[in-house]
Image 1 (tube, rainbow, N blue to C red):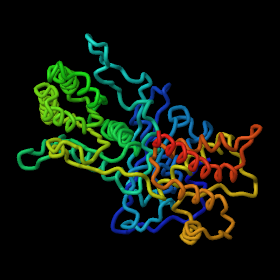
Image 2: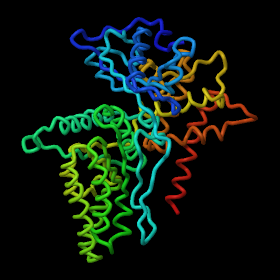
Image 3: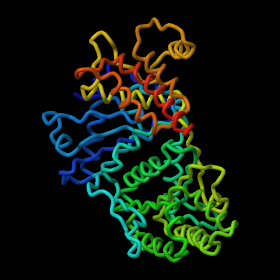
Image 4: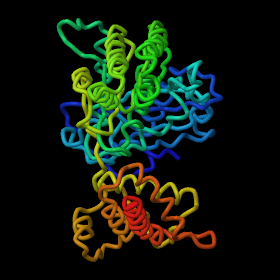
Length: 449
């Protein structure tokens, strides 16, 4: 059954001045030998035949049965909705169905690389200097949809990165308009910065597949770079980036360089100032900055960086970054969405059971503001949406926790309530709050030593 067509709700009245942008990303089966263009055309026809599409980021479209569309059934593994416009500007409530004829629809078909990362080893110390993935990779499949932020950082990053590559593709004069194709994500640990960089690279490799025939992600850990290679100075950094330059020589290949923990640049400068191997430290820092600058001449290269300590980022590097996005701990809406997706996953896999009389928790945007207010004030909810209220309470209890910690809570909650092969939905949702309290106690004990 077509997911979009199954909804009886009326379509939203989109702002007549413009159509609503929407992309469908169709992941092809590993066994498929079909052309991407044919899959894209078939998916577009399928969406048109469905009539309406839910205007919701990450919404999974149903793949038709073999009887209704043998070609898509045989060649497409999954398809999701993404790249939406501004809801307020378009006057579209999030999640509401929008007519096909009101959409500015784009379809991207892609096939995942199944091989995983390759590693470049340093011959002398037998240490991995970097890891390399062919994109799009199975390792990163679904990462984009799993990332939930309160701000529009995902939209902001995709627009910036896409325009940076577009400017390079159109050969805009860099002497008149300056851009470096360098992204910096900063914020506390566990908020999804590194995951966001990998997901962004994966997304762009698909969106620009008509311009670039292949794509590669090279991951470098700056902390390891400085802690292990001071004695070799900038020579090893040069060798590392020569490999990256070799990749960039193929103009039909899109190359992403991910540098984690760039605050290590500042740490290296401090080591130099304190007299600890000053010459080597400065040479490594300067070599890395020089090599990043050298990548500017390659229009098919983009540098993605992260830092866990905002105030410790080297000012010389900050100046090189075009976009500097702060990724903080998730707010209530993001926390609810993370726990909501995990709950539906466990229900779908049969690990959490919902009684027939109890509705599953709804998405945050579908919950009445009165319900949210009542729950946060500790009031009684009488509208029958007990699952919503229980999940809201659990989400409120998680304030200050990182996205990484939130993703572990459903497993911990399940361990608390799982009995004899059963775990009731409401018991599971209440157990999330118990898991939060247990996690906080454990962290306090660790902090006390």
